[in-house]
Length: 400
Ligand code: MG
Image (cartoon, rainbow, N blue to C red; front, side, top):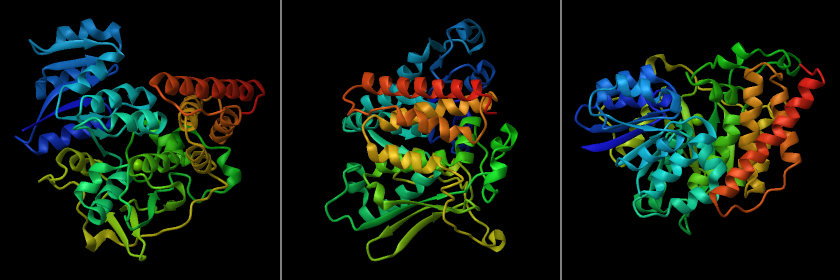
C-alpha cells in the first residue's frame, strides 16, 4: 500500500484525489492532509481518512482545528507546515492554488518523493530551481494537468519508461516532432472582440467543460491557463517552444497530442474528468482499476479543432514570450497574472485589462537566470509589484 500526502486537500484537486483513493480501497493510505483555511472540510476528511498529521496554513484556525480532529492527530501550523507534510509519504499530491505551491513542490522533490503535480505555477515560476530538485534520487514529477497527463501517456509510448525518468533531458534520437496542447477555448470562444470588454466575473467563472476553482477558471477564460501550460510542457518534457503548439478543441475529449517526426500523431482521449489524471499520477507506471474517463462512443458525436484567436486572447502570446525569454521571466509573468486575476475578481479592472496589466509588468521587468529560491521569490514579488502598479493606474484612470 502506497502512502499519500494531500496538500491542498480541500480544494478541487484535493477532493477529487480523495474520490480516487476512496474508489480503490486498500491501494492508498492518506498519512497527511493540508489546507490553508477550510477547517470544516479538513475535519470531515480527517474523520474519514484518519491521517497521522494535518496541516493548516492560517495560524488563527489551529486551535479550533485541533479541538475538532480525531484524538491523536498531530496538528501542524503555518504555510511552512504545508511543505513539511510534503516529505511524509510515498506520493505527494500538490493541489495548492498558485505560486504558494512552490515550497510544497520543492519539499516533495527534495525528499525524493513522487510529486503528483497539479500546482503548475510552482514549476513555471520556479523552473530552474525545481529542475535542480528533480535530480534528487527518487524524486519524480507526474503531471496532474489533463493536457500534460495526456502528453505523458503519449510520450511514454514513444520514448519508453527509462527515458521518461530522465526528463526533461530528451534522448538524442527522440523522434518527437511536435507536442500539441488542446485548449477548450474557455467560455468566450468565438465571442466578438468588442463584447469581450463587457465580460463579467460570473461569465468568466462559468467554464463550458471543466469544473474548477476560480483562479484557473479565469485563467482558462483568458487563455493564460494554456499559456502557462505551454511553459509547463517545456519544463516537464524538455521540448522547445517552437515544437509546442496549441489548438482549440471545444469538446475537451482529446486532452493533447504528440506528433512523431514521421507525421504520426498519438493522442489521449477521455471524458473531461480530473480523476483520471489524478489516478494516473498515483498509479504510474501501473493503471488504476477504477474508470473515470471512459467514453461512450455511441453518444460522443463530433470532435472539432480550430486555431486559437491570438488577437482576442493575448495572454497566450505573452506566455510564449516569457517562456522564450526564460530565466525569471515566467516567474514575473505568473506573479503579474495572479495579481491581475485577483483585481478582476475584485472588480477593480475589466477582463480585457488582465493581459494589458501583465504586458505592462513584463515590459518593465529585466529577467535574470535564477540560482536560488530567493531569486524566484524576488521575481514573483517584482511581477506582483509591477502588476499592482498597473492595476492602480488603470483603476485610477477610470478604465473600468
Ligand atoms: Mg490543464
